[in-house]
Image (cartoon, rainbow, N blue to C red; front, side, top):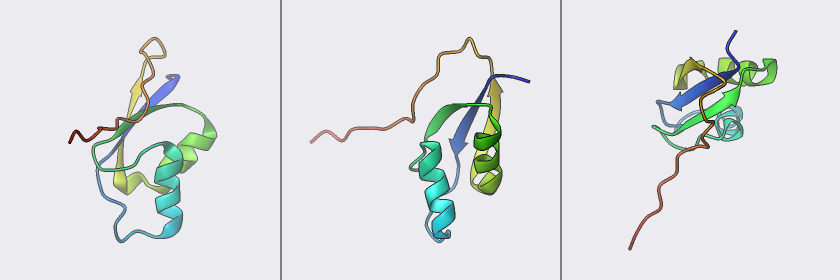
Length: 76
């Protein structure tokens, strides 16, 4: 079993129940297209299972650098 999971949000939380919105936020995701690398632990796997229809999951090597959720800053 690999040590980390790369989770990518593919659907918006608009129209979803509040527990699903909070689960997405708890995973470190915020908008469609954002990605986060999390540890492959039972707690994270349970959270991912709860919102599986809204995310995609890939196993990554533990040697890969963990990157936080991608956020873009607006210039202007």
